[in-house]
Length: 308
Image (tube, rainbow, N blue to C red):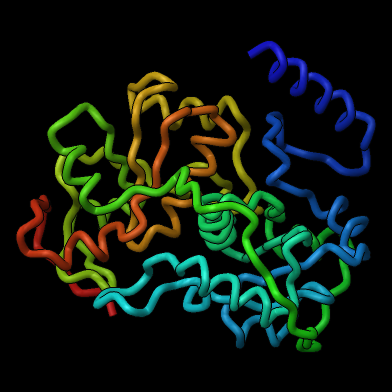
């Protein structure tokens, strides 16, 4: 842990010199987060590809100049009877090639949802052992506040051939069967949805029924960010306090889930990259898949209200 403490001190020293760029960050990640001022410097480089992870209609109204557009459906495998499952290696390679992304490029992805969408792509790429990806801290709003240039021009790129260099590592991935096994061992199940979803009061579209996986602990993913403010991640000491509710050691196994593995991908990032938990996995299918199977156990607390 000594090198991490030294890194934090170095980071704070550098940050203190940037008096015109205040920051709330007091932790260091493996270079997966990037600030708006850094992005403005890097985005002119030819090997940088910006990805706007928002719905197409929102993208067209205004995005960071030069950004390509993707959405959840682009990185999902539609062959399942339920939605939200991660795209295959070949599907992603075809998508990136069509977007003009090369294997040696660095991807910088942003959203307007507190990094939850961006983190889903980060998680997916980690599983395919592609680490040349960064997420814009604070999303597009932080870029605008920093004086960044916005455009409504739809970017068109020349197609390339994109290939992942390594075989899939699936380092943060867990299956339905592995979740079933966790019900009889000491693995912690963390539900990152809202309280109403966790209790079963609300059933979101895509789920077959409302409720939660048995044994689950509830911590809403949004507790880790300034949700009603600038949507930035909270300081390290606050994160440690929030997730102390898990009552586990940093080496203990944790399985995270939400509705379709998006919000839980963000929590996976926070736990694994910011808080140094060593054994964190995100359940890809999450509640959408789990609730589809009538033979899988579940719990709920109240009458279910359908949310359209």
